[in-house]
Image (cartoon, rainbow, N blue to C red):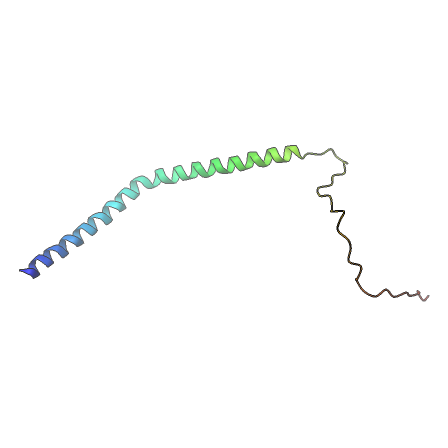
Length: 94
């Protein structure tokens, strides 16, 4: 009697697993296009926002032609390395 109940339970479990598998497969085919469309719209909005932010940043940094622009001012505190090597005095030979 115990074997019959376990066989019935095993078959029932296999059928439930198959039903869930095929149910998810069918639902994914139905809802996948909507999910992909939603994700593509979100990515498009993100890229548009980044592009607009970059355009605003570039418009603020436009300079006239021929104008000298310094992007970074070096630190006045930095000193050069005086111990580069030994200085050798030489003459050119003609």
